[in-house]
Image 1 (cartoon, rainbow, N blue to C red):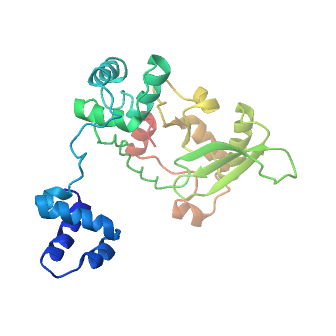
Image 2: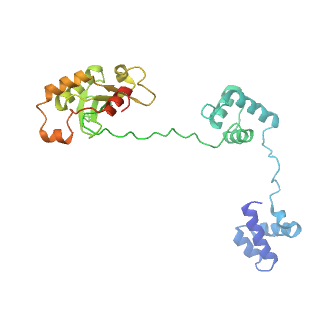
Image 3: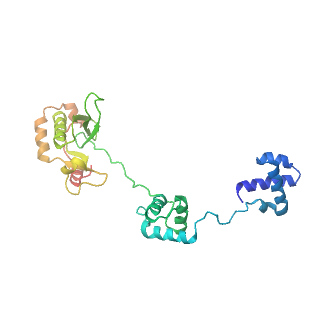
Length: 274
């Protein structure tokens, strides 16, 4: 019995006990007086089971045939099934069944059939857990660089690429506008960073697009960036050239680009992980 039928049985039971009139029962059940009279006659003759809908448990007149159901499930199992993540879902499978095989079946009907046949599950595929990377401890250890195309000048000029460089430890940034995100534009942007802050120990760039040509084999991955370690002799030359530009206070705070790399830092740069 459904919840509605159980409620009707309770109200009609009170009518039978003399607590309510049929007119009052009609108001409570939001039915007409004639409907309540008909239901009450069935209730007196058959009890609560007389209130169950007559088509309950019967096969629908619009139901698909068993042969059609078996044919559909056979195609789904052989062509659209598989492990979670590789198989097609009921909605997409229903579209392919109609377009490729001429078999029209509602997506929800197919979902029910696939669940009964074990070809589908309600479990969702969870995304891989990614832990946040710990920031570097000192300024200049790692600089992140990427470009973004937007109308940065709000109609006063053409759409341009903003190449943004951000220090990983302090979030100190520097921007450079150029027409395209080319190798020369990236070199100009990094040259501006070196002129202002000195040579960074490593660059963290996108593993795809123009940056991919800078990386080493094995340092790229889906959704991951590339760490480009700056050679020690290049950093040393930059340190000697810029040694007079830092104040004692900045060196003491460890915010300058020059510092003595520790074993852990050398291991990070060699492994290609920030």
